[in-house]
Each structure stands twice: as C-alpha cells, then as structure tokens.
Length: 397
Ligand SMILES: Cc1ncc(COP(=O)(O)O)c(C=O)c1O
Image (cartoon, rainbow, N blue to C red; front, side, top):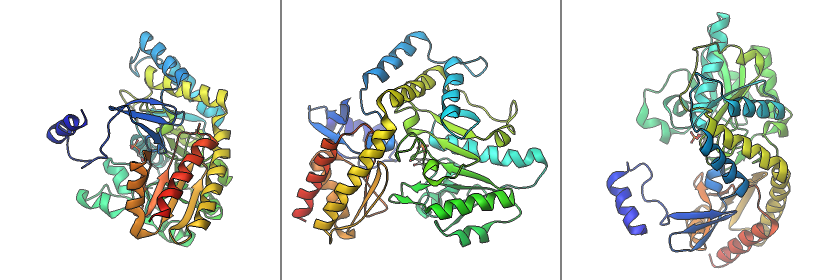
C-alpha cells in the first residue's frame, strides 16, 4: 500500500516535501503510531510539537465526536459558545485579556503583526517596522517568511513584505541598534525550535521588555511551538518572568485540529474594531471544541506538571549519555520537553536515520540537532526506551 500512496503523492501532490520518510501511519495510541503493516513506531516528535496528549486520547476523540454530532461550522456572523468559552480559558490561564482565533501558527502571527500595526495606526503614530531574529521561524505566508530569519525560506520570494528586519538572537545591543522611531514591534521565539532548540537568555528577554516599555514598542512572543505546556509551563514566557503585549499559539492548542490564537493585553487588543480583521474558519465550533477538550485533559491529567518533570528526567538521562559518548554528543539543550540533542556534524544524518530504522520518530534541525518534542504525557519508561536506543546507535557509530 505504501508504494501506491507514494506513486499518488508523486503524481498529484505538489512536491513541497520531496521524498518523505517511507512510512504511512494508520492509527495512533498514546506515544505509538502504527503503520499500514501493523509496525509500531514511537512518536518522539508529536507531529512537530502538536500531539501534546498523545494519539487517540479517548476523552479528546469523544469530545470531538460529540461536537461533530452537534454542529461543525456556523460563521463569525453568529455567536459561538465554544469560541467564547475557549477564549475565557486562555485569558483565565495566561496574561492575555483578549483572544482571536485563526487556523494555524502562521496565520496567528499574521494577526499579531496586523494588531501591532493597527495599534499605532489608530493612535495616529507612524510605526510599522517589525524586528525579528536571525535563525527564527514564524511560518510560510509572505509576511511570516519576511519575519523568518533564514535565507533559504526568503530567497525565492523576494521582494519580501517590507518593514521586517532581523538581528542576532540573544544580543541586546543588536536589537537596540536596530530600533528606530518607526519600530512597531519586536517578535521573538523564546526557544527557537527550527534552528535546533535554542532558548533565549532570561536577562536578554527582560531587557527587551524594558526597551519596549521605554520606546513604546509592542513585544510579541511567538509561542506557536513553545505554548500549551511544551516547556513545562503553560506558556514559556512564565519561565522568563516577562509578560508580552501579544503572544501567539497554535500546534498543541488543538492537538491536531487546526487552530491558532492571537492573545493580547487589553490595551493592544482594543485596537481591533469591527471589520479590522476576520476569518471564515477561525475559532469555529469544532476547532474550539478541540481546544476546550485539550484544556480539560491538561487539567485532569496534570499534563503541564508531567512535562516539567519528564523534561528534567529526559535532560538528565541525556546528559548522562553525553558523558558516555562525549565525542559524539556535543550538547543537550532543552526547555521542558522541547529538546535538542546536538551531535557531531558528520554523524547527525546517520543518527537520525538509525533512530527511524529503530522506529523512533524525531526530526533533524539546524543541520546537526536531533529535535524531540514528544507528547507531554510520556512516562519515564518511554524516556528510557529512547535513551537506551540512542545509546545502542552511538555505540556503533
Ligand atoms: C515558532 C513557530 N511559529 C510559527 C510556525 C508556523 O506554524 P504553522 O505551520 O501552523 O503555520 C511554526 C511551525 O513550525 C513555529 O514553530
């Protein structure tokens, strides 16, 4: 069957993903994904930080089925119970006062850019520049590509959406030098995911907050990957003791049902007035039922606490492995269960492939870093399985 799907994909699907890994999953249960031949894989990537509650969680699928039987989509022309209730949940649990729902991370970031710009427009102040960081990743739409500090994503799409510029991460002087009287916003990921899991320094993030306060600049955190418990905190800004004016969320917010969110302080959110922004699907009854079910499961199963504890356990186990394979493992970087294992450049691709052969799913990012972002419900035995498999692989490399 896999061969047939590969042929269909090659013939009919745009070639944006090239040769994918040779597997097609039919079913999921917790950390396990099962392919069309019944082979079991262990999902240590969680659909790239999406499947926070694992696969096939019964309370989740029951809630979705229940909503399917009621109503899937109405329109933003009418009031939507789940939408209002999910917005309430987010506000109750974060520093945000208001929420707007989109369909993806990139679309949430677009909403954040628009909100930052309209905030100044409504005040009659001409500010429109947005500063982001080198090696960042903010999405694949035109404005988010302009925000993404990676040449390979930007090059084919020049001229880019104007107004964006990038500076070196974790370098406060660089960002200070880039600020002008036209700077509307600074947007960062607190932990850069795509570049190989690089957390920002606490002092740097606190200095950015101060700078934004002094210069009347909107501070935006892109928490599309770090949000919803990934770092052992519901949102990563909690680790820094710094509140943004706007943050965005997506990925684990719907645990696989597409949803994104722009979350903002009242002062900024008030700039959006009727007609200024909108969406057809965003926050529809089905997508927001998913978000509500995710919050319910997080609360019932103490998912964020588990992420914190398992993140610590994973990091410690990997650091022990690093001592054993000190020439092959260069560095372990993590924030909770967003973990990067930087290995020696020349073996990175082979380690990734070997893990796949052992049916352990990860991703290779930043060229030399194995990224793991497993479901946040993992247990010590799952971590042990990963670490012993990696140990076995490194022993013969
Ligand atoms: C930090 C960050 N922002 C934005 C995005 C884009 O999200 P989406 O693919 O849902 O548009 C991603 C996706 O990987 C991400 O990691």
